[in-house]
Length: 166
Image 1 (cartoon, rainbow, N blue to C red):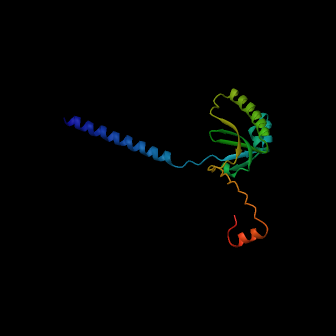
Image 2: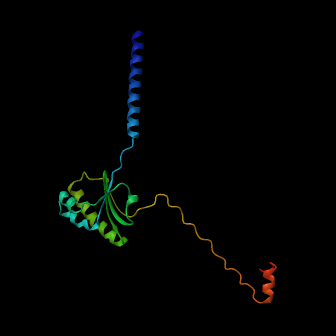
Image 3: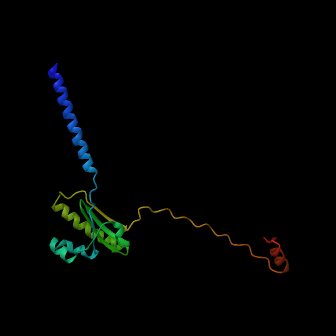
């Protein structure tokens, strides 16, 4: 009987340790993780990615580091997002030009994935930035009713003076 009692206490103590470890792990997981910064590169750099090494590319096209997409200049951007990489190529004035740049980048990324199949879960998109997170629906203006034309002449004047005008 005493042996069973000691075993129950031991099992209960182990359960408490496991629960404490789980809670500590969950608390650590809730801590704020710094978001990856955004690297903005001019879209003319996309064709050069094919033959420049990473060091040469970074030297030639250093780009600009931003914290959020809200800091981007307005325009179309070709974005490549994979794990901690956030590359935004732009801004481009026309959506059609951005689609051409996206097609070029898509070709390069497809070739890179063929060489290194471990690259997966990437996102390639053409978006207009900065996007407002809380866009309110546009309020339609009320149609303005044209005022009735005022009566002219002597009787129109008398009606307006005494408040009898329409």
